[in-house]
Length: 396
Image 1 (cartoon, rainbow, N blue to C red):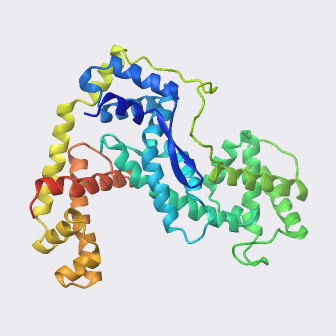
Image 2 (cartoon, one colour; image 1 turned 30 degrees about the vertical axis):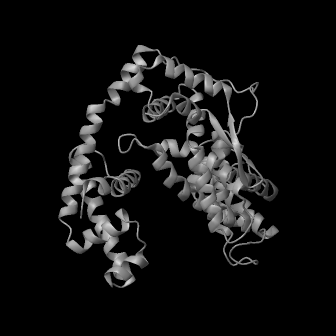
Image 3 (cartoon, rainbow, N blue to C red; image 1 turned 180 degrees about the vertical axis):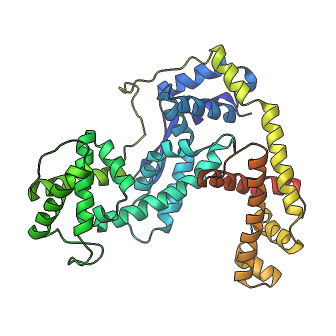
């Protein structure tokens, strides 16, 4: 168990950058008081890092306090910093700095908390380290595309689901959203890819095209809209779609706000939950009962160890070299005198066999449905097992 002071710092401090380098840790005094309050009220056995992580994650899930998100944001600062540094090192241009990527990572904290599943793994840091790297890659790729796109290119690329989410986030009424959506549908139908400017920078529609879009909208509105609306001219349609493009950009690429807090007199209101609540502690302890969690982990270990024994000797040797000894594929090629495609293919196949066994166990034992998110969670659990339990428990 970590010292109390170290636990306090983990949940109450934020990284401050100076230029593109780490400068120091900033302490938020309200978060510090909050975590100290928790440590005083919880039994000594529940003052661990993992328990407090799950405690605040539970509060965040229940949306009972905005404090939970801030505690977990502080907790993940180091993972976000290293992910930002790794991302910048791979960029071929200097458009985005370490500070830019670090703030983009911080902005993803809510999405990471939403996808984290404590039933699969209780290690939030390990999950966040992998998840934020993937998110940063996707965000930067999409931003490069958006920077290159005109409003009209963006409106052709955006999906209906994203469009509706963007209009809802903009605060439009249901009637306006329906009108904007129909205008967008007419735009996509009539504004084709043979416009000048290439595939990425489509030029603004001509006056004739705007007139055609308006005519199509007026003819479709009576059958497509549930409420009676007035006819629209070309200028109105253009105004609607320009506003729609702006809403889509804001939705897809929201402005990043630093999470670093330097003053104690901040106006953020933190509703401190009462950690001495018997019902809360009882609920959390029941959910995170040590014996049940240990039993589930033992089952996972048994499932994966049995699946591992079913692999051929060469596949087991490949896993040993790659995960236990940390060799690269090139080093394995030289060690085993195999071709690189063979090493890569056999590693993928061995990992897929173990993942299939884990998915089967989750369906039959804990009744987890096989969705894309669940497969991603199980894949994360497998990676943790290969890197940790494989080393400790198995001599291949």
